[in-house]
Each structure stands twice: as structure tokens, then as C-alpha cells.
Image 1 (cartoon, helix red, strand yellow):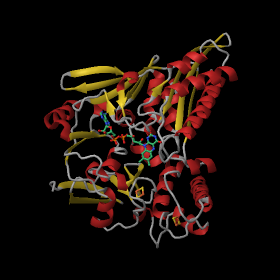
Image 2: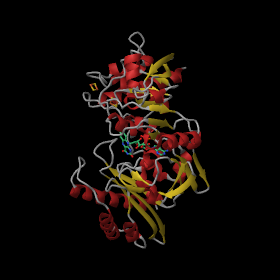
Image 3: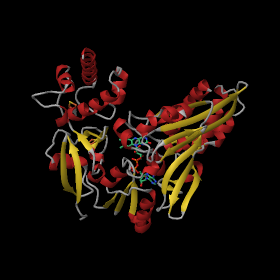
Image 4: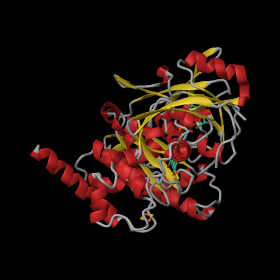
Length: 163
Length: 284
Ligand SMILES: Cc1cc2nc3c(=O)[nH]c(=O)nc-3n(C[C@H](O)[C@H](O)[C@H](O)COP(=O)(O)OP(=O)(O)OC[C@H]3O[C@@H](n4cnc5c(N)ncnc54)[C@H](O)[C@@H]3O)c2cc1C
Ligand code: FES
Ligand code: FES
């Protein structure tokens, strides 16, 4: 077995130092070592996007990132965006517009949508669909996910204009 | 699915990265974005004892457009390539192709260098680089050398690059005229069933120069000189396109797999190339 290495991660604003084998995957470190079970494991083969987290300002599939590669990175998971007492506007809009059914894909969807709206605050429907192409949903048929993201963008922009 | 154990290295210069490769020989492998390599390691189809992460090697970053010479560092990601306005102006073909590679998450991580060095016939950038007539620069213990993209690919996963060499950059002359990258895939994010890269210039209503390359239709990318020759001097009408498609079909060698039987792939290749030629001509 390879030696464990010391890994530093800043996750949802909190600094962590932990020991991991280089081959461990970021998703396993987040879920099993840090207890952040928001990011899910869907396909394990880099396709579904259920494991999406934000790493240094990029949406990444954390089942395809080695813990060692992430050493030094700043990470945001769904837990860092909002919680039951203070839902993120994307979470509220997914609820309002029925952007989820079983909910398995939802943490990845919302974490990805968050980055998409950072980069493109007023996307068209087509840009939302293209920008969300790395996330699969087996329940909703996507219509309401797209609606929820467009509604979140509209609310975020309205709020900004009012400020 | 977890990769087998390996030792991890994160050198901060090209020289130290090459030194690690030299020390460990074929037991070592570089990782760029990891989005071809890590899936292979998880499936235990790639066994590596020393993984050399290039993320901190500054010499491999950056895009420069100087006059009509374009240079792209090996560690430039697809997302960075798409976002670069200077590059989109100098060579819009690249952005058009990169937007058809994988999905947003993969494009944030996947690099241009990894895409062309990988040697997977499914990758989109190798055919593109053949179409452009790009040059790859390889650095090894004995210094660096340039290899034409058109000479780089020997067979699937076998390239001109030696085990102790790192691809540092890609250089090409910004093309003029019309361009198109057309790709048929089963769904968004998928590798090509067939893809075509076409560059055309026009003079006096006729095709002055042409370059045609096809992706995922053989065990290497196919630069079809015959297809290009069929277009040159023509009016790029239906008849000329038909001759070019027939010429291209003589150069490809698709295999039956989960993207379809050979007949189907040859059919799709023809449709895709005709579309690419038509669009490139409309932009010429
Ligand atoms: C879901 C999914 C869909 C995809 N769809 C597409 C697609 O449609 N089209 C497409 O083209 N690709 C596709 N890919 C592959 C993706 O684009 C990869 O990122 C790319 O093939 C490899 O780039 P990388 O930086 O991730 O390289 P890595 O995975 O890190 O490396 C790939 C190989 O190249 C070698 N290598 C990397 N950099 C260098 C270097 N500088 N010098 C020498 N050797 C090097 C590595 O040792 C390894 O053998 C897809 C991937 C996924 C997960
Ligand atoms: S679990 Fe990572 S992409 Fe599906
Ligand atoms: S809500 Fe069930 S997979 Fe998306």
C-alpha cells in the first residue's frame, strides 16, 4: 500500500488537514472523511455529474479527481451553498418549480448551476441546457430544472438591481 | 472503483517533471486533467507506479497569438481555450470544436495537451491538429524536438512521444478562409460516431486550398489528402463534394462497436463531411 499523504483542503470555508492515500478519490474524502454526503455517487464513471462540487472556481466531477490532485484546493459542496434554515435561492427555486423528484441528482445540479450563474448571470434557456449538459437526471425530464435555474437567475438579478 | 496504489509527484518545473520520468521509466506517467487517465486507472486498465501531476508546471500554461502564429501550452484546459477571445478570432475552428468535446465539468479539467497526447482515436483535438497542420513540441532528457501532428499518431494509444518525453506546446499558423468542425454523437458529451474538420480558402469563386481530417473512423486520426485534392480548383458544388466524400471513404477504416456497424459509420462519415465542407465554404 502506498504511503498516506498529508492533504490540505478548504471545504465550505473551513480548513482541513487530513491523511489520505493519493489514489483516494475526492468524492470519497468528502463523503467518508469529512462527512459531507451531499455530493452523491451516481455512475462512478465521470458521466452523471451527481458528484459535482466546486473546486477553485470550476465545476468538477469529484469521482474523477484524485485526493492528491485536490491538495491545496478550495472546495464548495451543496452543504456550503445553503441549509434547511437558510436555503440558497437555487434550492428555493428547485423546490418551487419542482426541479426534483427523487433528489439524487439535485446536489450536483445545484452546485453546477451555481457556477454557471457565476459565469453567466443571465443565461438563455439554451445556455442553461448547454451549461448543465454534464448533469443527468433520470426523473424530471429536465424541464423544471431549467425553469428553476432561470427563475433563480431572475431573482438574483432583480435583487442585485434593487441594491 | 479506486485506482491501484501509486506514488504521487507534483513537480513545479518542466526539468523536475522530466527528471522524475527519467528516473522511473515506464513505471511513471504524467497526469494533466486526468479525465482520460483517471477513468482508465479506476478500471485498472492503466497501471502506474508513479503519477506525475503537471498542474504546477508553469511552462506548460498559456495561449499566445503573435502575428499569425498561435501557441497553446499543453496544460491549457478546454474551458480556457473556449474563453480566449484572441484565439477565437485567430482560429475560430478550435472554439467550435472544443465546445463539442465532452461536457462543462470535463472541459474545466481536460487539457489540450492531454487530448492530443492521449492517442485515443475518439479524441477530437488530434484530427483538428492534423487539419491545421500543427506542430507538437516534445521535451525530454536530451532537450526538445518538434513533431508534425500529421506524423505523431502511429496506432491507437501509440504515438511518436517517448515515455520520458512531455508534450509542452502546440504551434500552428492561424488559418485564413472558411472552417467547420462537424461532429455526430449519440448524445451531448459523447465521443464522435464520426467527426470532420475542414478548412477552405477561396480565390475567384473556386477552392484555392483545402484541408480535411476525420475523427474516430480509424485507429488514428485521418488527414485525407485525397479529399482535399478533390475539392481544390472546384466550385465546391454538390458534384465536387461527392467526389471528396468518396475520396475520404477510401482513407477511413472504421470498426464495428457500440456506436454502430461499419456501414452505418461510413454513411455518417459521408454526411458529416458533406456538412462540414458546405459550412466551411459558406464561411470562406
Ligand atoms: C464523460 C467524458 C466525455 C468525454 N468526451 C470527450 C469528447 O467528446 N471528445 C474528446 O476529445 N475527449 C472527450 N473526453 C476526454 C477528455 O477530453 C480528456 O480530458 C482528454 O482526453 C485528456 O485530457 P486530460 O488533460 O484530462 O489528460 P489526462 O487524462 O491527464 O492524460 C491523458 C493521457 O495523456 C498523457 N498526457 C497528458 N498530458 C501530457 C503531456 N503534456 N505530455 C505527455 N503526455 C501527456 C497522460 O499521461 C495520459 O496517458 C471525455 C471525457 C469524459 C470523462
Ligand atoms: S458519480 Fe461522478 S460523474 Fe457520476
Ligand atoms: S430527481 Fe431523480 S435523478 Fe434527478
